[in-house]
Image 1 (cartoon, rainbow, N blue to C red):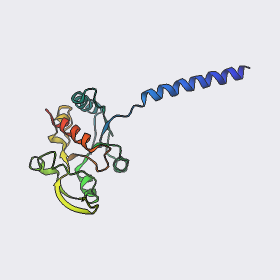
Image 2: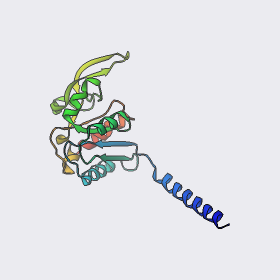
Image 3: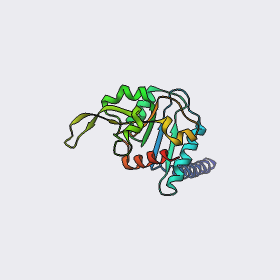
Image 4: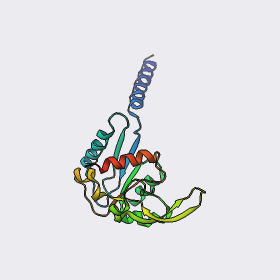
Amino acid sequence: MKRTKRLAALLLILSLFGALLAGCGDEPDLTVFIMPKEYFNPDAAQKIEDKVQAGFGDTKTIAVNASPMYNAQKLVVEIAAAGNGIIVMPKDALQMMIDQGPAVQLDDTFKAEDYQEGVMESLIEGENGELTKVKGLFAIPVEKIPAFKAAGYEEKDIVAIIPVNAPDRELSKQVMKELMKP
């Protein structure tokens, strides 16, 4: 009898715990993932998230996740996982994989002449499904993004991209525009 009561109590606790976890599991509408070259202060991530979230109010939920330091394998996993709307990464890491077409071309959203550091040649998929090499704006230098400056993150040679497998490219572009507001 005692054993049955303990089992029932344990099942009740587990079900309550499960209910709590289910309530906390809301997925954001968009995630910004930051992979620094050296170190990233978690307080800066919160400041960036607060600034972007303020721009969207209650209409969209934006999360900013950051790795405290660089890890090439983790970066590849984050890109391949297709869960991030924006990825902030070292420019040299992007340059090593740019021929594989990892980033959305941003010429329709920003002026390439304002961000020459982000102009590169990359493969993009054309309307007929064929890959074509084009030169265009694929990355925005973080040092030119006001939200990162305001958060105290101005590491050199770090860029922000919208990955080609972003869950919502249009929302990603809206968030990128929000990051650019002073």
